[in-house]
Image (cartoon, rainbow, N blue to C red):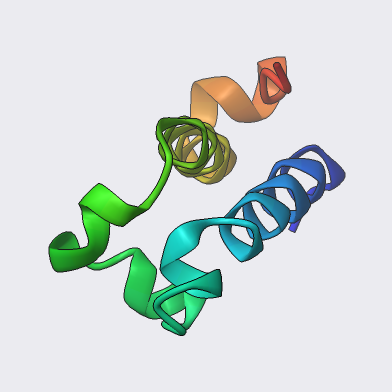
Length: 72
């Protein structure tokens, strides 16, 4: 994984580990990403997740491969 996505991934993991879905309800991070737990995940984590998805998508998009990923 390119270094531009590693930072976003680490930030996403850190955010999810601090969320109520993981701390109070004792779900795994993977379970918290499912639709039924979406309301338990803070909006900040959801926006970081979208950024991470865009970063990963940018690795595949040929136009983005030449320009580089937007990191923030």
